[in-house]
Image 1 (cartoon, rainbow, N blue to C red):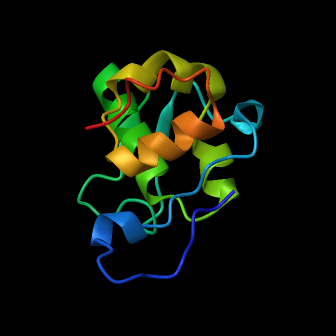
Image 2: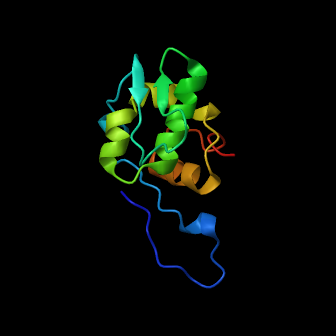
Length: 115
């Protein structure tokens, strides 16, 4: 599921960012341990490597992937359903991004996941 629409007068940049939402959380079978190196298309910063043993690094990885994913494969390769459910309240995603995920998956707490 992708969120794309044409710009209208008065639209903001934030309202035009196309976020990708998975068809099902069960498709998220990414790693739960080890070190993950994100490709440049997802993380163009100086440290695209994340150690999943660190909660802070795992949160940073999930924020980055959810905010920057352009395909379903980006989500399914790097995110894990159980880890996502555990971290969701701490992710502090862009508001519209979190709203799209909350709409698609009511089991995610609608009051959490936004910044």
